[in-house]
Image 1 (cartoon, rainbow, N blue to C red):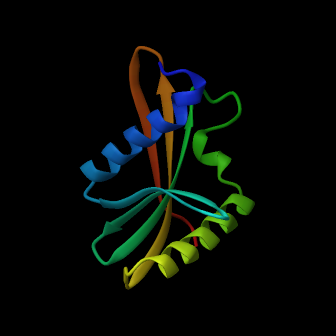
Image 2 (cartoon, rainbow, N blue to C red):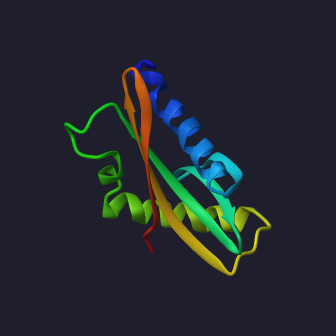
Length: 119
């Protein structure tokens, strides 16, 4: 199991593999601007998907997807607007997903993908 400092990056690698295996095409990762960072930007058909990844080792503080609060969702919406302004990508639909990765010792990670987790 990775140390705490590497847990988030490990979870993002697992999430990206899950998303690509599910048919999404990742077009950007860890995009940063003054307001923060987008974990994953992907395409699924005509939809542009902004995906927040949360990774935990256990559920003592709740499931990883529960870490995306209303305030965090608001920041992700702002970051998505910044990303769209900085890129020449067009989409009929924009979607906000959350991927929770629960890393377990000696067992495969559990991945929960909430499509359209917020609007």
